[in-house]
Amino acid sequence: MNIKNIKDLIFFNSINIDQKSFYFGTFFLGSALPLSVIFYLVSIYFVIRKNKFYFFKDKYNQLLLVCSGIMIFSNVNSSINIKGLTGNEILNIWVNLFNWIPLFLLFYCSSFYLNNELKRKTFSKFLIAGTVPILISCILEKWFNVNGIFSTLYGSIVWYLKQNNSLENSISGLFSNRNYTGIWLSSLIGFSLYELLTIKNNLFKKIFILTLNILIIYFNFYTFSRSAIIGSIMIFLIIFNKLKLLIPIFSIYTFISLILLSFPSLNFIPLKKLFFYWRENTNFLENILQFNRVEIFSVTSKLILENPILGWGASTFPKMYESSGGIQSTQHSHNMILELAYNYGIPLSILLSSMIFVLLFKAFKLLYKKNTDIYHFSINKCWFASTILVTFSHLSDITYYDGKISILIWVLLSGLRSIVEEKSPSINIKTGDIYN
Image (cartoon, rainbow, N blue to C red; front, side, top):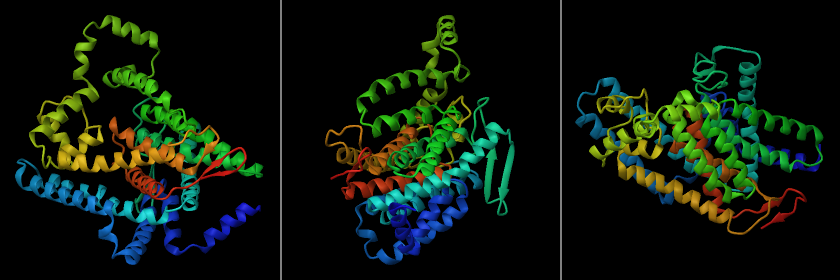
């Protein structure tokens, strides 16, 4: 065991139960959500107990408390004033608050466990270790053709294998949807890459981490998730300071996505077929507004303008979308900004979206305010890249309603807040030198 490993072991053995609970919650997040939630709740309890007098002084808490109030008031309005809702639909409106308000609290509390670079590095290790079961499930599905729903602890922990794959030969592993798997794996690339490039004098560990990197990238591609694949490219561009390439890549991606999202049957077919399809369908551009995302965004925007202040209430979207002439089979708006505006009103959407975009902008200014070469590289930059990925992916799809994904998003945002509030050094991956 080298000196670095000894230091890491001493660090972990010396930390308190609350910090360990946070790490264990991270470890179980990908594969055993109920266990993860229990450990996170323990870590939240300790933060609230120790810092209860400062809770309401935190500027982020103040904003999120306002957002919580708007959400509750919106739910009251929807429950009382929207006609035709069943008792179950009203119940779902209120249950949806659990997707938000508890995670606002997690955002605040996680910052205490991520408030320095060493803690964020340790988080990264536990997150990667917790992804191993996901990779195993992908291996079982892809290479051993294992099929079925597997559950334990009285059905509280469920692994889905090949249950909801909409594309032939795509994989989803233990997640219920391939897009969830894609976002999870692509968000891990930055962290696993950091571990690979900073390992020294440990050949076995380097081979192990290299294998994990290869598996993460390989299975990420086989989810056939456009957001995950383009996100993987974005991760590398951000980490290695090739940001100028983002604009042309996103322009090409947007153009191709517009076509593929509008005509799902064209997904992953040769460009030659696409050319002939376009040539034979002269009304292609005229019809494009009637299909998939563009059509969903159009109907959603119309509904938002009909009830702009408090929204229609979460879980009512499928019913209201269909009654407004929507032609797709969809459960949500596929854009988080529109989703928030539809569910809770435009003011709430602006407040919450602005908070996140301002946080991302501050982190960008901090991490890229100096010209650095490819070797000046830190866990903070990898953290920023992963946070950008999971947030911007919600502009074209919504994976947030999977509990694993939503928890990961708010923990990453909390870590980004800590980065903004604490200037940390970067490391030269060739020499190990520290740059302040």
